[in-house]
Length: 162
Image 1 (cartoon, rainbow, N blue to C red):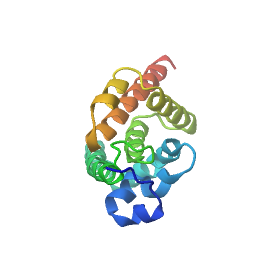
Image 2: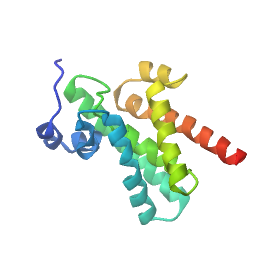
Image 3: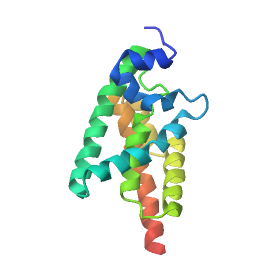
């Protein structure tokens, strides 16, 4: 299977590609994961606008995760690479989860962003293990959930100290 280079035409070829590539943010020439992570804010804002109920918000994030499993799996197969760097829906959903449990305020949100990107890039154990072993759409999405867990653990630890 040959590896395709995604472009705007690729995004419009199937809804899965548009989702997996974060509605085009994954086509950013530099740091597409960081650009895609920014979309976690509007995703969370949309979910909170739909419902103030935490359990329902979590269900909507789970639905977004499952949508990503499908979209990233389909896009990865179309591209010939399981986890293309431009597929950023994993960052979008995982960061929205981090924001959901981050204390209010721009300082906390900025710290959440930096911590999530740090753990997503550095990939400490078991993130790196999951990234290497889990393939397809689930693998693409799951390792970012682990990075979200690390970011939230640090935030909650800092919150406890402050």
